[in-house]
Structures are given as structure tokens and as C-alpha cells.
Image (cartoon, rainbow over the protein chains, first blue to last red):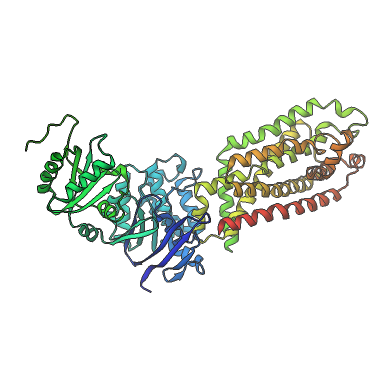
Length: 341
Length: 265
């Protein structure tokens, strides 16, 4: 078995009937940095919980390091390190005690454990606060300590469930650095879930995009973006005019423009794809304007993982990330002048 | 092997948590301490009324065992809040993805609850000693007293843990715990002898497990002359109490174990 993780047609239905994971299959190779990208509720955490022996699958075949995750659960647990989405630490214990406890639960002890704990606390930059209680730490420090505690027993395979959600950009960058280092220098296989495209793009060598319990696309971040094949132009319409009718009319107009390859109607407006957005954008604005469809903003950008997601699902991954990811090309105020013909 | 060492490490962790929150420990002791000081003053003259209280012993001597068990009861009924915390914080899941022995998680918790009750009891005993309370059966008596209280606590911890795992709500654990803590010790012979109660309450007291545990502690602490007037005997009452406690424990800890297995799976 060269696959570290092998999942074949995994289904998980919760007791209340919710189908969280709906027939997914994938393999993770040794030493890989593998990622699941998807919005909240896509089934990412559920998949991790199955793979880490916390949840019993409804059907499908799952093995970790060639072991059956149900029959050999204890053996699997010895090999894996897990960081869950919520940072879990004992606030009453010091950083060191939290680490020691985690080691003890992995049947480690003595000088070996003490050395390992010191080494890891140094690695995540907590060497100065080893005897401070974890409850007093900042969010970023807690995440780092939680990550370190998942590494105490030198796992070969690390599961990280949204390891940077809720962190400020600086703490996020620090975590990214550790993770790259662990994968590159220590050869640890990493399975990461995230709802941040930037994170998936930067870290993962191979990516599965997941939505509503199903895999919608997979490949390297580069190949996925290449698949989009074109730049995206996203336009929003003026307040009050973005009714279904305006959108429909706009779609009609856009469909008639040469070079527009795909038109997607999403909650925030309309996105079209075109080989060369820079030259076609003027045609678009002119054509819409002559049909009295008023734009409030137009953005264009090279393809991102979000475009991959949008193309497959018709939705964005996270609305709040939209504003930071695109370059605003033009912003039209309410008092805009009509473009002269 | 891993059961013993895992239980030990989790036990130590829980103890650290108790000791690092001395304010919580203090507040949990506030009620028994107030009862000890206030009640023993309030009822000190009542206890000399012939026919109501057994002759020859002070109210402090009579009621201290009752206050010890009342504390053990209410303390045990709060122990479910800790498992709620473990469940909701994700700590339990963090433990469950390690190869830790599953039973050790529950055992470590129960032992630390028992330990907490013992620490509280020792503090109450020291305070009672300062006020003039003594244990007739000596150091061995104190030990068997603490054993009875610890097991009594364990048996009731089970109910609290089961409620905690079932509801995952600390408020519910507190609510139900508080609801039981208030009336039940008063409807036992913890503070007032059964002979001084209206007959319906005497009937309740007669089956109330708290009465049995209190009698066991009294049989150890009171001088032998007083034992006969209260128709208590040593070690008879201790054995009866332990038997009763064991019967309760089978039910409550059985329920706890059942629910814990469900949570773990």
C-alpha cells in the first residue's frame, strides 16, 4: 500500500438524516500536502472525523496507512496527529503540561517526552511561555500550541481541520510557515481542510474542491485554475436595477459579445469568463450601457480557485473574501455619465 | 497497563484543575461551612430538649456527620458539569483521537471527583475539630469515614455525569443538582433525628440513602454510649451503608457507563 489514505465511495449520514458526505473517493500519497477546499458545511470536518476514527462511516471503504479505520482504530490513532477546527487546550494547564498530557495519552513518558515537548514548544515559538497557563494565551498562540500538541508523538500523517480559521493574517502566515516546513523537512503527510482559497493555493500540492458532500473538482491548484482557462469579469448592477429582469437582459447582451466564453449568474451579480478580459471589458460596458443596464462596479481578475468553485457550483466559497481578492478595475457611482457612442 | 497509567495522568490533570481554581473550591465549601457554624449555634440548645435529641451528645457531634454527607451529596451532583465542559470544548474528541484507554477517561474523572469530596470533607472536619468535634474511633475511624463519604460521592457522581452526557448542558446539571441538593438532606436524619420529625418525613428519612450514610459516619464518630441510644452499631452501620451505596452505584454508574460508551462510539 503506497497510499497513506485511501477513500472509496465514502458516505456519511448523520442520525438526523443529514447526508454530510455523499460518495467521495480519493487517495493521498505519502509525503503529500493534500487539501480539501470548500465552504462551511461542505462535509470537510465530517470527512476528517471519519478518517480520524471519531465518526463511524455509513458506507464505503476507508483505510489509513493500509489499516482498516474501524477494526484497527487504535493502531491508526498511534500514527495520526489531529488538530480540530476548534482550538482544544486545557486552559488551566500550562503550555508544557498540555503537551505532556498529550504525550502521556500517547503512552510516552520520561526524558524522551520532555525533550520532544521542549523541542516542539521551541519550534512554534512558545519557548518563553512554557510555564504559562494556556488559558491566558492569544488566539494565535493557542493555535500554535494546539498544533504542537498534535505533533508530540511524531505522527507520520497530520490532519488539520481549518487550522487558521479565525486568525489574523500574521498568525496565519506563521502557521503556514510551520506547516510547509513540517511537510518539506520532516516528510509528514498533511491532510488539510480550509475555506480559504489563498491557503489552499499556497500550501496544497493537490486539491479537492468539495461542496455539499461531493467532490466537484480536483487537481493541483495550477491545473484547476488553468481549467478555468480565462480571466473572470464580475459585474454588479445598480441598486434597484439588479432584479431578475435586469440580470436576464444583461445575460442576453453579454451572450452576444464576441470572446465571452461563459456566463455565470451568482448571488452578487454576473461573472463572465473571457480569454482577454482587459480588451473585452470596454465592449461589455458599452454594450450594457446602450441597453440601459447600469453597472455599479466591474472587476476583473486572473482565474482563482474561487472561480473554479464558482464554475462548478454557481456559488462563491465565502462572500467576505471577495473584496480582498480581486483588483477593482472600475467603480461607477450613481451619478455616472452615459458613455458616448 | 495503559488503563492504570492513563487513569493516573487524567486524574492528575483533574486534580490540578481543582487546585488551580481555589475560588471554586472555596465557594463550594461556603454552604457546609455556614451550616456548620450557624446550625450548630442555632440548634445548640434544642439538642438539650429531652426526647427530641439523644442525650449526652452536643449538636455539633450530632450534626457534623450530617453536614459532611450533605456536602458530599451536593458536591457529587455538580461533577457532571466537568464532563459537559469536556464534551463541548472538544477536549473529549481530542482525547479520543489518541490511543488512550477509553475507560481511563471516565475512571480518571470519577476518581478526581471522589478526591475532591475527600479534600472538602477534611477541610470541614478540621473546622469542626476546632469547634470541638472529635472522632471516637480515632484515626482508623476518620479513614473509614472518608471511605464512606468518597463512595457515597461516587455513587451520586454517576447521576450527575449521566445527566451531563445526556443533556450536554451545565445549566441542566446545576439545576437538577440544586433541586435534589436542597430537599433531600433535610428529609434525612442528617440534621434532626427521625424521632423529632412528622411521621411522613420520618418515613422518607427511613429510606433516604443519605440517612444510611450519615448513620455510618455517626457510628464511627460518636462515643459508644451514644451509639446505643441512637441504636447504631459499629461496624454494622458502616457495612449496611456501603451495601446501600454499592446498590445505588451499580445503577448510577451503570447508566454513566452506558451513556459514555455511546458518546465514545
